[in-house]
Image 1: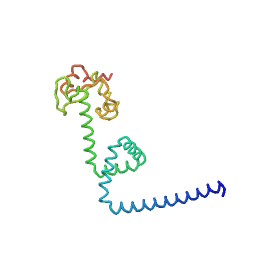
Image 2 (image 1 turned 90 degrees about the vertical axis):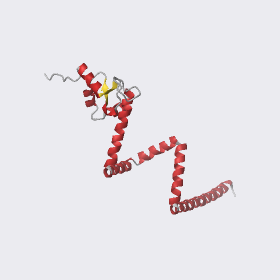
Image 3 (image 1 turned 45 degrees about the horizontal axis):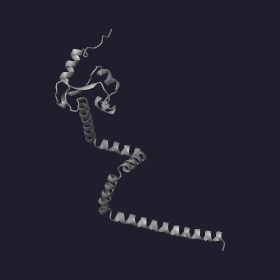
Image 4 (image 1 turned 180 degrees about the vertical axis):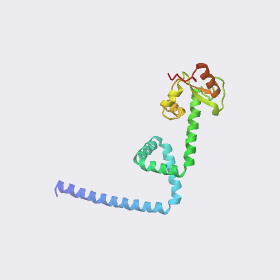
Length: 187
């Protein structure tokens, strides 16, 4: 027997071994799936606990996999969210309200020097606190951000300079003293 024929015989034996190994793996997969579906209710909490532990131990990889999965199924996810929002408009409305309240609180706190208070008088009732454009021009600026909330706009733009937290009383006093309330001549 030559060296070539010995190699061919050895490869054939390896191919047969590989085929047997693949067949065994397929049977094992099939039986493990059958076992999983037969015992799904008792295995589900164990699997969920394992996944939580894995995500906690591998946060970067978990985030990467989540991004990949979201990108892969973006249309399905959007359709599911849209359907949910249509079925539960009160939940969506409450979520938007919470988001805006959080943005307002964070913004007022940032421009209030670390506390949500008027920088002039120290008033702290959130219902009466607002953001003031220090140099005026708030009307033009609000028009330029096209309907976005000023609070969310400031947060998304990483809190630019030129704003302060004022209560409505101090803001009105400032507008009157600086002549910001006067409309330009229409001539």
